[in-house]
Length: 151
Image 1: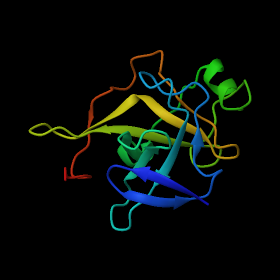
Image 2: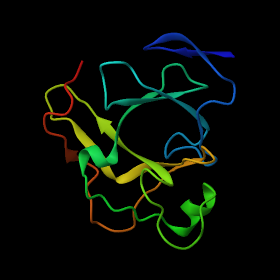
Image 3: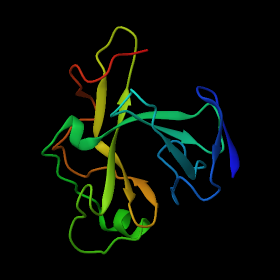
């Protein structure tokens, strides 16, 4: 067991191998390679993605199907390869991959979810990528109605 230091949750015990590995990092955070998912009782379906290296860096997410139950993934070939998925066909959310929408919570503005660039994690390997779509089917500011209230 190791200690995960966080700004928002204090110190937490974590298995050394726990968490998700992002071989390419995340856009604007390319140096951040490992994130630990944190679920807080009573805050479901929120999932916090806490950086293992930077205590101040924590993303607020929802499973993408909470925001849009009909969401369709469109992972590029390079994204599938980066997380160890077959090159052909799209993975199934909940069976092959975990797909998360990053949330934006700002004072005075509605909560929005980024459906244009979901965080996608291979459920078998724990490898992840932020998969930026190459179409305009979804918005990076999809309103999330009644699902979350800012703290």
